[in-house]
Amino acid sequence: MTLFIIIIVVMLAVYLFMRSATYQRMQQKQQELLTSDLEFFGISNQSYYTGVWPKNKGQGECIEFKIAGITFRKGIDKYIGEGVGTLEADSSNRYDPNAIKILAYDGHHLGFVPKDMTADVRKATTLPCRCYYFILKRLTDQGEVYLTDCYIDT
Image (tube, rainbow, N blue to C red; front, side, top):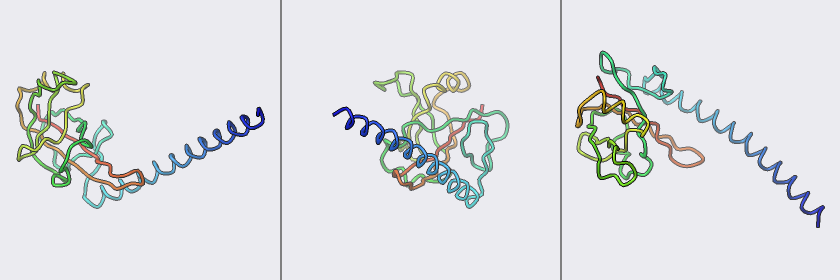
């Protein structure tokens, strides 16, 4: 019985190691694919925030952030690419009364300003306000992944 448990533990350790190496290779491949997609769309990574940004950001100061919760929203494919939307307070949000939702040009709810950025956004502007978003979709072995960024001029 003890030998069986040892064998199981060793097999589990090998499995986790292999999975980790596989995960690292997948992450590297994902980054390569993303880079090629960005080059195709003529987009460069110009931000300290590790996100992708539209080529022609607004002039002057801006606050930049990812779109949180986009994977839980329906109908996002319609908004892939660049767009102009609205940031709006979402005080009825049961998870965060300080939440700020991001709406597309037609009012479709895309997601939220990340919780750690809401104070900065509220300090910098009066809600509702205009925002600029960028959404890129990538199909991976793990399913669909949305690469997103949003910014506001201050």
